[in-house]
Length: 386
Image 1 (cartoon, rainbow, N blue to C red):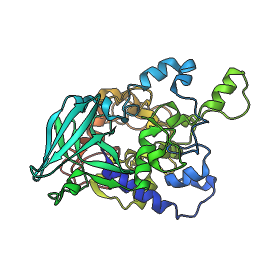
Image 2: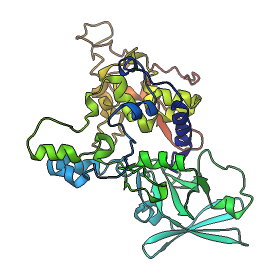
Image 3: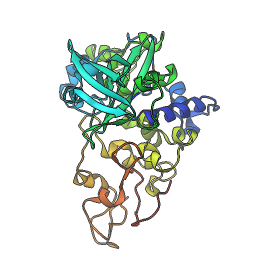
Image 4: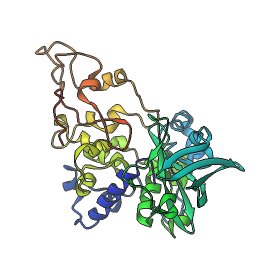
């Protein structure tokens, strides 16, 4: 499971519930968020869509033939690094030896023949497992999985960047393990494992069990834009007709946010998953649509792409988002004349907008302050509002 495995499990539950909902015409869905399951059943391409094989995918290097600069910068993003062979984890490379204790059990990581092995022992009995995949770029957290007799096992620990070390996996076993088997890890069901792989890899195949599925670790070009084989063939023949690559920037606002919400939680996915309270801050698409300025049908200036360029590393300075805010809000004093479509200026400041209007909140167990994407006027000491 991924570093945010707790949330993806809940999201997977919401997706399962969503499959029971009657499908409605696309024209009616334009005015409200839809579930990821609905989008997957109705759209020719949607993130996390799985095909029988990888024949429709061209691969990142084929995309680089026309988009070398974008491919180069996208490879440095958290999305591109959200899944990797454990052997490539710089975090594990920096933390060999004893890394974690859980009750009477001690966890140690050792490098062996170019890979990492996990040893778990309570001094009486022990087990050694190969760490095969690392989920999460490590910018927030990273967790680890391995295959054991055809079953996917999730580590009992995650790395957390704010701790510069390891702690228990959020939302999992918090009490002392009662056996070595419990201490080793948690078995992940097939449907849950597929959800993890689908959001953290590209071109995941649906045929056969997950253990035999093909995929490319990390979210690359085709993870968002869809299979590129036919698009590239058309470009080479200078043909404009026929299938083309998907450009999510052209979607109407609610679909654009749902598009990112395929992995980050659409409003409907979160609601059907029964999630309330601070945990919902982990789902920016859901929180964004709670903003007063979102409106009934959304605003094209207020989609995920308005602030985030998925081809570049995440901007971490508040000042980096001011320009996006000022596309909607004037910079003059309150009450001054505004341009077409502009909203009132902030009476407090004209910079550092997100510091006040998109506060940071710590989600229990995650050891990290997440930005709340519900844009609002936050009163000091005011309780959290859904």
